Length: 261
Ligand SMILES: NC(=O)c1ccc[n+]([C@@H]2O[C@H](COP(=O)([O-])OP(=O)(O)OC[C@H]3O[C@@H](n4cnc5c(N)ncnc54)[C@H](OP(=O)(O)O)[C@@H]3O)[C@@H](O)[C@H]2O)c1
Image (cartoon, rainbow, N blue to C red):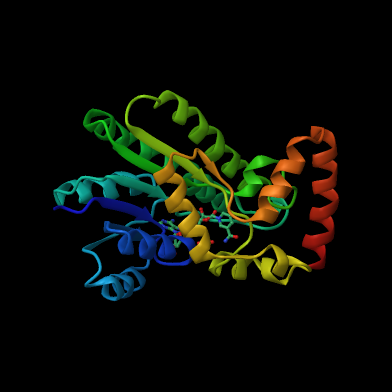
């Protein structure tokens, strides 16, 4: 019996690497994508014997990145059964501290690439009457986060886009889900220094459990999955607060945390 194939972006580190391990051990062959080829090679080597793994290196923040990725997959003659849009970049600090290039690259990776891979893959899934898409958002997509203004806005896009598509795809056989983790121990968090925020230990998830939550969500038809009880509590509590209160509280928290960090 042929195994289904999952395309996972951002599989060279963190949550994406764990998603690759989870999908491989649960019966999928993989196409893994990122910029660092040696990391992808090491992962493919590790998973040899468990799954067939194809590597595509691409910079998805570049205009032609997503097209190059999917053209390569087409040349390999592979059908994508599950698309996992995981690759993402973050920035911590005031918006004006970002260079315009940093801001443009973040928008290109977190939003445009995710939109484009979805747009290119979806028609085939609808035609086949089956397929799954897992978009990695964040808890910060649920509200404004001063100190991470652009990042949280890109994740709000992921959430809104996924929810709308979930309704548009009703009855097509295609399932789409947003995985919205809170703080998760990865290179991204280390680079941002977010693991040094006081109290971050209590909130910190491990990448493996987040990946397993994502796998389960897209296989059980859950449109939004927030891994971790504390993250769920925080999002649910915030849902019932007035917008101005959430914004002001986030502003105070942001100023305290990001200046202390
Ligand atoms: N860690 C958290 O606390 C947290 C919380 C909520 C949501 N998330 C989201 O989870 C996802 C994964 O984050 P992570 O924490 O696992 O980050 P990570 O450890 O920094 O990994 C990011 C992955 O994205 C790839 N990537 C980055 N820029 C790329 C580009 N231009 N083109 C192609 N691939 C690129 C990286 O590979 P290369 O560098 O090799 O290209 C790497 O594989 C992101 O969407 C992030 O926003 C993370």
